[in-house]
Amino acid sequence: MAEPYLVVEHLTKVYERGHVVALKDVSFEVQKGEFLVIIGLSGSGKSTLLRCINRLIEPTKGRIFIDGVEITKLSPRQMRKFRRKIGMIFQHFNLIKRATVMTNVLTGRLGYNPTWRTLLGWFPRSDRELALRNLERVGLLEKAYVRADELSGGQQQRVGIARALMQEPELLLADEPVSALDPATSHSVMQYIEQMNKEDGVTVLASLHFLSLARRYGTRIIALKDGELVFDGLPEEIDDVKFKEIYGEEAEEVEIR
Image (tube, rainbow, N blue to C red; front, side):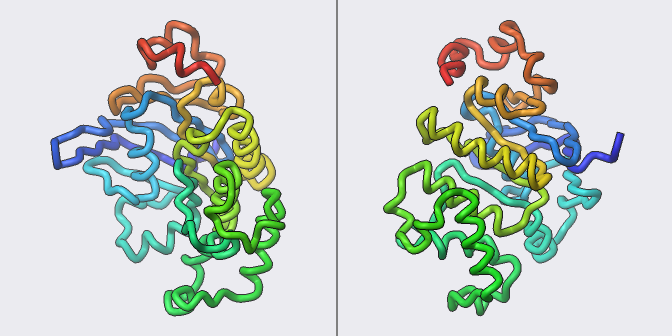
């Protein structure tokens, strides 16, 4: 088997205020091109895990390797450069609401341009052409110059996907990307993420609340409970016993989608 693309070793995160232990000695590996889904109840540590992987949050203990590079040792400046490889899709879209869709998508190139240029809104023609191609890819080309806050939730999340595509990432981290959307729109958004995985070869880590979505899109699933890794395997290996072990009394609600 090839060397793993992502390695998480003994990852622990303690939020010092309140002494909350969000992650407890979590270890796993991900092969290049996998679509790994992270499941678990709200507060189980899913978002903390993803944000530690791109160091939006600093781990308390443990090591993270991406493509052979120990990112937990990188300086802030080195990490900013390395983060070009890592796309991120957020639960609540994280768009500049009053800006146009085009402007929001172009922010995906911030890591590739000098700060002074981006502050002035100057992006090279190649970036603008790439933005239009990515908007066309997610079915939003006609919305390029519409304000982001005029779009539906599903459309806003597709802008988030187009923004992530601008980084031409090797790794995509999707933090509850469909939790604010209805079931039909959820599948539409997940299919674009699946397309990035299958057509572009992007390794995907997506946290999802609903097991049915995890089973449909994940090639592998890990589960967190109270910050600990309690399952790592294939979607079909989660039987009723394991399901209730992960979700407890909320199992029926989680299975709705």
